[in-house]
Length: 195
Picture 1 (tube, one colour):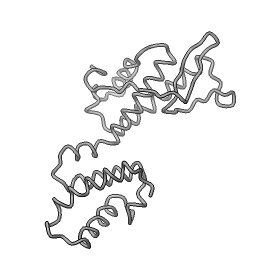
Picture 2: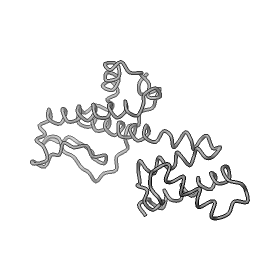
Picture 3: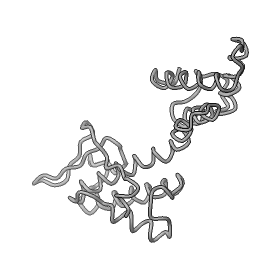
Picture 4: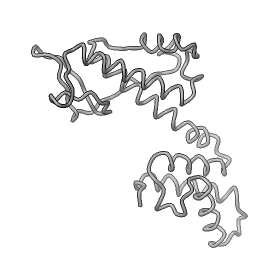
C-alpha cells in the first residue's frame, strides 16, 4: 500500500458517502466492489487502491470520489489540491526569501511578478499552472539572493535547491541554513497578501 493510513481513512470515509449517493441502498458487496474498482481505474488508471500513489493520483481519486457525493465542501476541497499545494510552496519560498534578504515578507516581489505577467492580482483568480510558474520565479529569485549572499553551491556545502524544511539564518560569519527545524510558511491569503 502506497497511501498512508490517514489517506486510506479519508478515502474510505468519502467512498462510503459516494456509495450511499451513487448506488441503491440494497447494493451487494460485489456491486460496491465493482463501483470502487471502476472509480479507481477511471480516476487514476490503476486497478487497485494499493497501487494508487500518494500525491497526484490520490488527489484525482479523491476528487472523482467527491463528485459521486452531494458533499460540495469535499468537492471544492479535492478539486483545489494542486492550487493549495502550490500556495504552500509559494508561502515557504516567500518565507525563505525573507530569511535570506532579512525582510519579513516578500509580497511586493510576488505582486511585481503578477503585474509584469499581466495576471490577476488575487490568488483566487490564478490557475494552478500560473501558481507553478510563480513558484519557479520565486525559486529563481531565492537562488539569486543566495548567490548575492556568497553562496557557492552544494559542492561547498551550500545547496541551492529548494527544500521545504530549510531555514536560513544570518550570523556574524554569514548566511547559514538548517534543514531540521520545523518551518511555518507564510501562507499567502488571497485578500491580505496581494491587495
